[in-house]
Length: 284
Image (cartoon, rainbow, N blue to C red; front, side):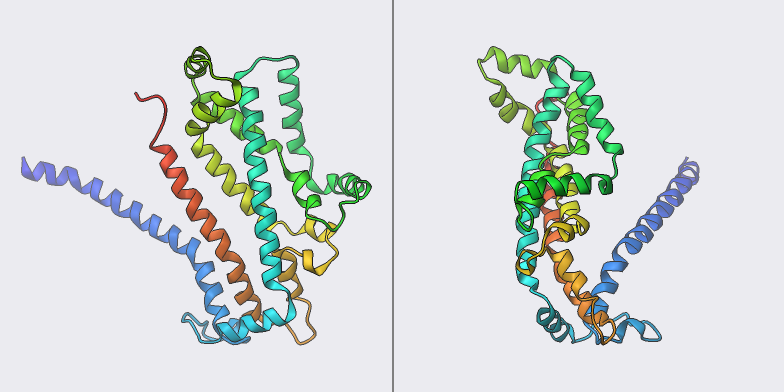
């Protein structure tokens, strides 16, 4: 009996070992670019070309970052990106969740046509919308202002589609009817019943929105003129325009500092995402 069990356990142990080997390898491949970025950021400007490649941290991070501060208004740009990304994320979560809730749980005229129209906008490349959006921003006199970055991005088709699909499957009609019987209005039902259930979807959409807004370079580069309004991506691009050759230590030091807010936001939203997965209004 024991020998039979031992033999039966061996394939399971082997498959588990292979599974963890692949997980460790995947984690290494994912983390190594960040590790290499910090290694280059802490060494001199020639550290990226060292043979053999450097794998240990140096002591030049402060010097490298100080050179980046001399060439750009880094802290101002970082604050601008934080403000724009936060405002855009909050607005997207608010409007897309409301629109997704309406498309999922309400019946109204032309509902299917409007949802189909929203989906069609997903097929329009960003480059095609730049010119008309720029003209609108110019007519409104919003060029070189944060409004030109925030207002056009306050809602998007992916967010509406994502929230609609999640709400349709996760929020049961019985819960909404129970709220109506208790005398709750539309917004109260949405805030007290729907939002706690769709926390995972909100957290996921928040991560995507914040990261996409933070990493956006093209549109801010088009509409922002004043250096004091630059976002961090434009500030990092300025580090590549030098006559003395590319200083990768300086570039990577500034890039690593610009990556820290993304990591913090990701960790915060991830905790919220996990908490939402373990809670729900309907217990089976």
